[in-house]
Image 1 (cartoon, chains in turn purple, cyan):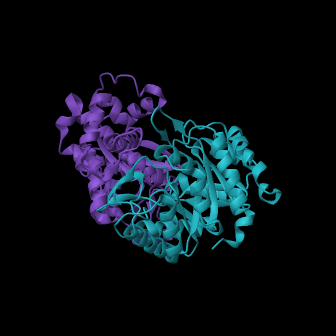
Image 2 (cartoon, rainbow over the protein chains, first blue to last red):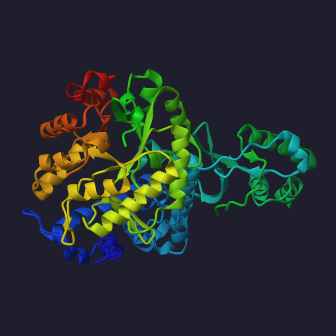
Image 3 (spheres, each protein chain N blue to C red):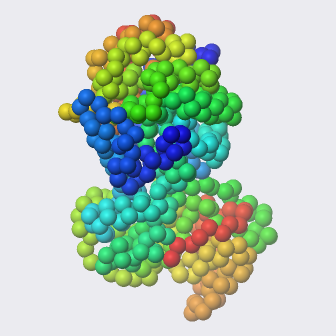
Amino acid sequence: MRLLEFQRVIAASLMSGESGAAKLIRPSARLTAAERLEIYQRSYWFRLRDALAEDFPGLRAVVGKRRFVRLTDAYLRECPSRSFTLRDLGSQLVCWLEAKPELLGPRAELALDMARLEWAHIEAFDGAAEPLLDPERLQDLRAGLQPYVTLLALHYAVDALRVRVDDGGADRKVGRVRRQELYVAVHRVDGSVYYRRLEREEFRILEGLRQGRSIAAAIDEGFAGSRRDAGEIAGLIEQWFANWSRLGWLTGRTNTKRTGR
Amino acid sequence: MRSAKNQEYGIGVGLRLPHIGHILAERPVVSWFEIISENYMVDGGRPLQVLDQILEQYQVVQHGVSMYLGSAEKLNRDHLKRLKSLVRRTGTPWVTDHLCWGSVDGRYTHDLLPMPYTFEAAKWTAQKVRQAQDYLEVPVAVENVSSYAEFHVSEMTEWEFLNEVVERADCGVLLDVNNIYVSSQNHGFDAVEYLDAVPAERVMQIHLAGHSKFEKYILDTHDHPVVEPVWALYERAIERCGATPTLLEWDDQIPSFDELQHEAMKAAQYLPAVACR
């Protein structure tokens, strides 16, 4: 048997949990071939389940431990890791769950919001940073948003819920959570990840900048339909741009990273 | 094959998250830290910030867990590119990874799976090691892994396979004496016979670690102190290889930094004085 074929048989057994590869393994004095294979099968599933549980503790708290294991096992079967690093293991989870909300149980919308927030958290932790916007170039009337910043339009306050989970509530049952529309930026400052709540118009302007709109167009779209008066709008624009600059969110390069909804 | 700088590296410890605050605040005297390359092959953020702070104070050697030199697919270009960028950042004198496989058809198991000890596998693996070494422009050393299975297709022993690969690749060896012990217990071979067959002149680094003993097998868990039979193998390895950079791995149930360093420094009694700085 050639090396490639050999490795395909072993990998298929690890990922499926079936014992087909046992025929390739010599038994030892103490273990059968199937028992030896099982050591690797258990290790594969424990390692990958643990990695997802570590990255998505809020999702686990919302859906419960048993449902979390069922859904992550199904995810790993359909979306085996395609990256050399476990950091990327959950990169398809949100997209995969959006297509299978029934796996999330009765609070699917809350669970999906949490999964989006938790993937954004990973991106904010070690995502790329672009050079900051040069104030001299403001005349170009364009600005981009740091790739590590994710903008989320949410239906539940999963930002506060995730903080509670981090503070030791991971094994406690998540009680009733009130539905509300809110906008959150997941970002980092000095290497630590933070969740910052945004005004609706603020979110829309940032979304526009991310999509490559000019600053003027993003502001126009952001305040379209707003009931705020011109004076208030001018004050908010000044305040928000000052905040975004202080937080290092604005870059000289426009980009089109997806906004989470 | 040995790096000219390797006499500068005595007893090191693995850089692990729970110790970083202590290390940056207390600046303990440590010859060098081993980092898991993949933890720092990221685009930005805290991991690289912390690494840069460590590099201001300490020598760092890179150890990888996912190059999968024995996988039947080609080297992952994105992985290599990120690894080289990190090599430039750290100034690591050599790079290590495992003599194993772990991916197939672009799907990753994230495990260190044992090779079938065949001539075809040795030739293929050696070719990939050479490619990695050429691309990274630093010496590469391959580490023997712990294993829990042997295969019918194998045409040689593990130590013959190791020799076959490193001779063909002209690369170094990261000799893990705990892994030799674990595999010898699981497969019933003589650990000293293995050790005596290792090409001493190619051993660039040694790993020590603890393991967990179960009723029918031993698992390489890196969560205990080093056991006496492993120290005996280490003593034998030093007799054969001379003073060699040595690292204690501890990845689970991680003790305080002081306890970890105390355990690592036990290696000093087996090393000539020059290597114990």
